[in-house]
Image (cartoon, rainbow, N blue to C red; front, side, top):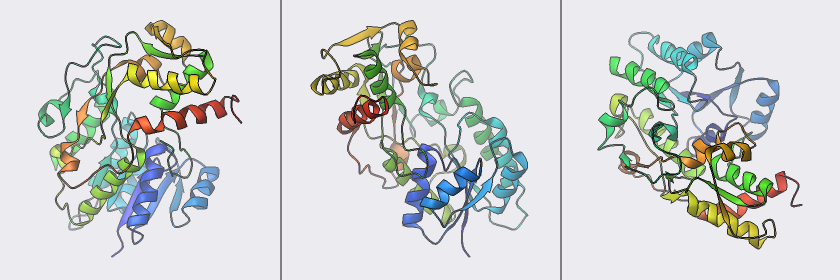
Length: 327
């Protein structure tokens, strides 16, 4: 029997990359993807003609529930902050008729879950979380943490029982946004002292982690942990933001975009003025988010792509081109 997989967020950075990797590894599966309109459907079909598309959005609760009920595995790669959509997916999975194989939900949270909103921006980290050793802490974070409200929905349901290759979005957030802001203001920056740290991973390596979990799910669970223990970090090292900002400054200066290699220390208010995207600059450049990916590594996952430092120059070039500074 052909395994049926339903995907949300295929036009996004993570979802698109994941489906590309999945179909390379498992061309035998049937993939159905939610897209918002015919234009997105055509873009997906142009790259992945074997994918079935259904028009809808994250508030299309009936469509989400139906497709989740009809699928063996749901890859929720869309917004990590949309409880209505996740509730509909869970409802669909739980509505599968008795005697059929239980459905599997692989939900995408976000690194913001590890960011302490009470810590000062730009301050050094006070701890790192391990997704095995600290699982009881991670799954009981307070609701004021980013993504925690939706994570809680998923956990409670289970307790009851770099440029990417995607078809639409191929741009990440943190490093590209930093390079973009630096280029527009003529110099790199940190939020306060920039001593905060963040884990990083290439989107292709992240996609491989999803594929690994899908393959284990297709084995009936396999060696993977699921339900309340099925919380997976994926990372390939860490960076201090002031050091990444310095790398952007050095590359931009070498290419003639900046007058010096200086990194400006900005306040939270000044950082908000410097950003040009919807993502809050102080939050994506000024907080700590450190996690150790013990659980996925125990399944044999290893990062294959270079670290974030290898992509600084490329990020500067791409953002310079987008701003019309480079042909």
